[in-house]
Image 1 (spheres, rainbow, N blue to C red):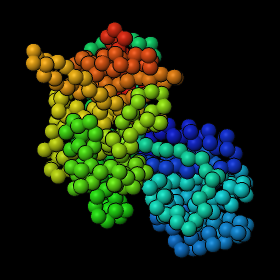
Image 2 (tube, rainbow, N blue to C red):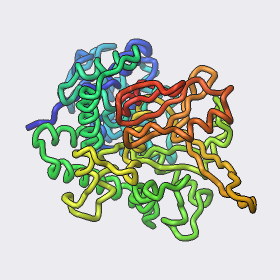
Image 3 (cartoon, rainbow, N blue to C red):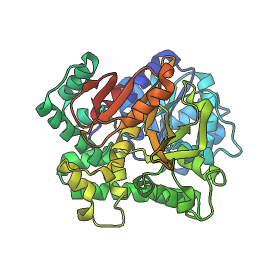
Image 4 (cartoon, helix red, strand yellow):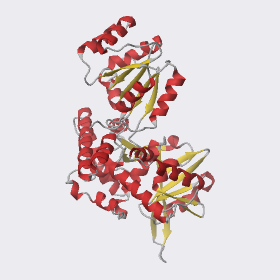
Length: 454
């Protein structure tokens, strides 16, 4: 059975590009492997144009590649393409897709000349990391509109499992701050926990719809993780990137204030392996949250790039990676999430899900930690209490601190202490947890599935 083509939000952005660009730029869809880039681009090309040619450079034969040596004669180039693919191209009504463009750099270099000609539209897909690693000796085209694509977000997941009305209910509740009731919230949290287990990789969602079997789903996720790990080994033969990647769940489980690079790679510091970390970021398989040393609107101006947390870009893959060295049946996260008994020590699963949803919604990730000294006894012995704001958002000219809880417990000490320090900078404070939405004084307590609406 062919895989289902899921409704994706990136489609609307592609439509805007087509209308606004009118052939003046090519479109580059960048993202991690297996997130559905090729599928949605082909769907777009076939639905929105009179005709299309899709060149998949992972399988393109020599005859196709040789045409790019004749790019100075575009009439010959286009005639050759139409002949090889047996497709007629129509001026301003056809599109040529360069799929997996990172595998053939001359095609990307040709974009400059093709766009200038303006006979047809051009769409490229590829992994940003691989694109960066394959640009030596070529001219990078400036005539590109670039769009980042991610795994299915929670709303897209609900569309995929035919729960569109659930999306509308969640939006209405959030926009009108209307309580849902405990019974409805429990049902919505079950859907959200399902999303955390399955994740947003189209191949995995398709496996869920076809099999409704978590063992089958887990196998598909393991295959994708192995693909990512193999890709990292090709980039870094020492295996350091793959170790950093596979250690993400363990590092989050430590509940430390940052990813301890030295605990994964002996004698390493973030500064010493900055190039490897940049490669991981460019792969878009992970999301970095950087420490904001001065939590104000310009987070990036005060971000400490040596002090960070790392999350998987897909929480479904995260759940599998956490127990990659064991059989699926030993994965306690599956059991506990399904039974709604996720313990506090597994709360980092929710944190990863929130990070994924915030990133998919277009936010960069920042967090903040601070300490408070407390005098406890007559001898004036001091103890230190640590506080952490899990995520910070910039809205208007203010900031919004976020605290994440993996249960219904609505204590928010970190938010309260943060308010004492930075009250003049704060627009809204948010507690993301598992219960119905409510307001505790000026703290908005929201169910975690509303994260993408913030």
